[in-house]
Image (cartoon, rainbow, N blue to C red; front, side):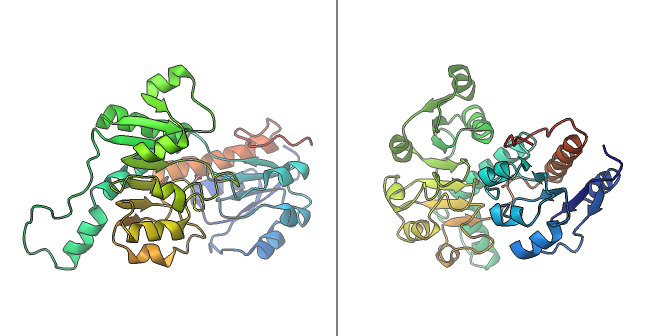
Length: 327
Ligand code: GLV
């Protein structure tokens, strides 16, 4: 490391122990007040910084990079990095990093929790009980969809998709189908007990459709009115990937019309705003982007983002880069 410490911005409030770790090596500006800077304000904060720890919601694009000539690395505390304009970063010589692996199992656990809550109508049932409406047992009260032995359809088969497939096949005896840009190696398919199908077959066969693909221009509205119309009316849809992969307006209408049975959503188009139509229908479970939120996993994510900054400025190279700029 050089004599003058690199200047680092931590764009949102994170674990104090991780801030302290970084402060032992860098000239750190933390954001303990947890201010949500506008892009213009972020550019001002970053103008004299060499690196930044972001949390996934700060947009890093050409306009920001032009205002931050010293910037060399952006360490995202998230596995998804659709907040990065990767070509613009690469062109500007800026390395981006994300936090793969450390959140895989935790996020898969949450995907399954949301699937279960959705299929078994847990949120609806809880609201009913809290509202004092539970007076009697009845044979079909909150009768939902079967999970064990049903068909789990996974769109996007990266590490998290594979971890969900294992839970479904091994834990719940589900038939697992998947669709992905590229097919898994045969050994990995066998280990996940997952069968590759085309997207139309996936939609038609799904009892439960789980979305775990990254957001990009290609995956924008991968599930819209046309795709929803191909699903079974008894099917459930779970999105733990990113807002924008589902057309939320089309989904709200499909849920209202009971064209599918239910949905579980942890991510939303334009979050933290939620499409008003989703707030009006009972057959949806809504959570505020918390799939990786256990204390130990969030700490591991923050530490991996910090490790990327440390390794980069130490000359060892970033640990989990998403691009390879030539500088
Ligand atoms: C959370 O959404 C992540 O990408 O880590």
